[in-house]
Image 1 (cartoon, rainbow, N blue to C red):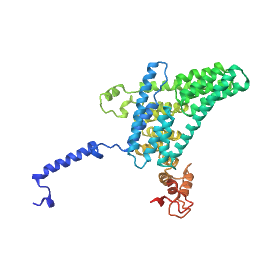
Image 2 (image 1 turned 90 degrees about the vertical axis):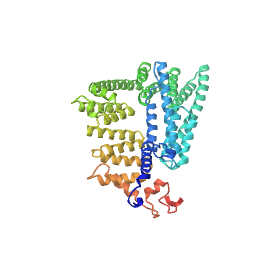
Image 3 (image 1 turned 180 degrees about the horizontal axis):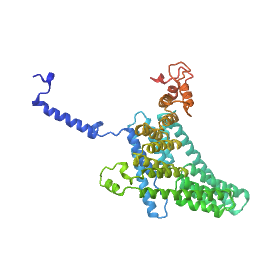
Image 4 (image 1 turned 90 degrees about the horizontal axis):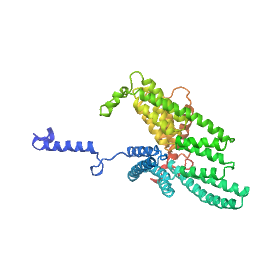
Length: 466
């Protein structure tokens, strides 16, 4: 029998089949990267880095207990280090630079958290070198300019404060008082712009202590509360900061504002605490115990029968309350938890997925918004939010200058939308603009935009370098 025509010769091909089977198994288990090493896709690697970064951002490093504070700082450092290592792997592997740009941008954020402005600037420059006209390049240029500007403000205004404070202490005048106080206030604001909130708070506190009669003293005390409440979301420390506004500056406009904020925040935090307790009460304790032992539990099994709808409402209210406090990370976390733990409530889960994308978009995190909208398409394709998510995803692509993807997104929105909707006319207008070829060089406007070439000059086009 001719084995090449009819089949394998059993004397030799059983071993061959075993080799094939082993090779298939090896590829299945460990991947087929260089040297047989598992290669995680760049997008997944970037998501893993983002997860570590988010975890680090969520750790509070301010606490009355010094031991707990140091423990939190160590944990945060470890997570930032992990994120930076993963981002660095992305940079090393990404030959085209699409993922590398975002990885550089995130590493710059970490260096800013550590107040290493020079290193942050280096990574901003790396982005510009990769793609001078891209979205992240524009962000990087702005970041570099902000660092340089505020570092210079700190240097010059701190010297001005020290000089005029010394003059005022020896020979006080209204002029030296105002110059010294304003200079110190500017130092604090510059630190705030650099996201060095520890130094910003310290200098605002010094402003209040040294110049309590200055017109900006009440603003400084109020700004301390704002940083705690709305930037680092530390309500425990922010509370006395706002209370101090009324105590130290009772007749100020800021005192009335602080009183209102405290009242509103107290109500919101109390409601969030109540809703969380109620959610915990509705958890199926037996199912939770089963889950801990490794048994597979469906989302529907996790809740006491008949209370899933109430749990959904609680999560929605919790997320909405965090939004009121501008605590978008915790609002996103609440929506994501709803979508995961109550995935059997299809409408509510789809709504939560859409809200996650919307919050990321509002916060300027366009790539994460794009992924969140993609999660909606994959997990809830029949959602009532589908059409708007298609449109908003296209808007996000346009924001990060991926005009080809934006063009396809706006066209898709037009094709699935019936009747006169809020965004249809705008989508039609954008598509018409994108399809223009004003210099008749064969490249449409959106292709020229993405390549950074001109649609007004036929000699400037995407194919000129090929």
